[in-house]
Image 1: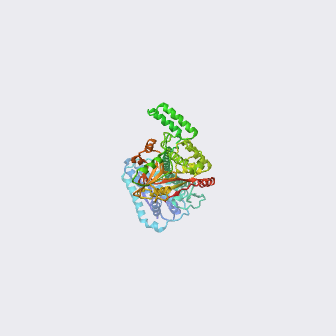
Image 2 (image 1 turned 60 degrees about the horizontal axis):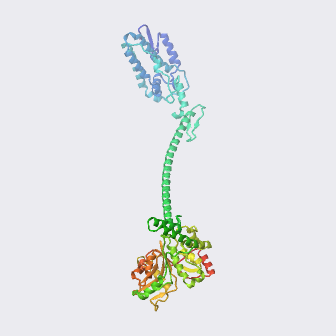
Length: 590
């Protein structure tokens, strides 16, 4: 059977193949076409080389399996639209274009030689056979109706190029001349992206050194590794930001700590300088410098005549040269005056015990504010020099001036007495206004072979911060038996050096009132000679003794130290005391 039908054109009769739509001019040509195209050759897919199916199944396969070439139907519609919009006097050109389109489309399905490609499963292809055949038939009828009833204008460009434009790679944009080349390119170059294993290809694979991912080529590997590096760089940047914040916080904390330390150091220096000034260790000069400076102030204020200034300056220089006190602050005979007073008056006193003769020394312009320790030593030494028990160790001595006392203490340190105390003063007292206390007086007296002891009343022993144990100790020092003794007792006991925070005084006796209360009799170096000389009158007023009397309620400092002389030391005992002073200890009560 010859499945042909006539096709009428404007100039001559054309025959069209019902299988592929090919048009020929004669019946012999149609037979040759059927024999060559549809009998000897099979219909083969131009993209994947599928064969073994009929023409309609192949059309359906191309439209569904190769979607990138699925512009076939859309181009049919474009051709129809162009035909519909053209003028009537171009019908011959339109018919020729339609035939070219049909020939091009069906040639794509029938022109390839037979190959060994795998065939499409029959059940999948036949499932849509009716639908595909119906669509293809309708498309042909639609074109024929447009040819008969429309005026066709000139079509610019090639319909073949519109339907079969060169394929472009959707991954890298590369353009290939044929679809088979494009498919091969995609399978080889972008196999990892398509998740399709390479077949029959010797191209090397590349493993990521960071995560181990296999890449098809070097460029993909490089891009992949760059992503790793960017992520690592970002993380490092975040780490740097965090590290920078931590460093900033650490820097702020360190600055705060340094500021606190600097402030503490500044306060310590200020406190130390304050203590240095308070205790005369600020290198502002000693007794001589202060004496001259204060006398100049007195002259400037009109309280001292210039001639008096020069006379007193000369006396001071002479006294400093010989090392003996000039006696201008000395008041003698007070103990004898007190003995007379208690014999004739003081009816409220039951008993009174007085030390041996003691001279009072008060502070002068040269030691005002810091010389109390030196003045109390002068008081104690003045009593020892009048006591026969100390003639052996103090023979030929006189009461020294303050600079001489400083020199004597330095000599005792050089002998090895109280090295810890010496270090506190840097082994230097001369030329300073350094305060001294009971320990320094103990060191000096021991170096002179005077036996003495220090007792530390380190805390209160009575109500309201009082120290009744201190009064009891002093009472026992002056008198061991109080019953049956006379009202006034002049003992052979030296006075007692009394030290407390910021000041020192000298205890010269103790009263026992009729109500059994005790009252100390104290010489204060802060009391002037004018006040002390009031006690030398024949008729001493009771109010004059007020500056001497100190009851239990008058002594409320936290701590008190007393130094009492108890005789003379032998040379051997002096050596033993010097050795014992390497670690200075004091008796504590309680």
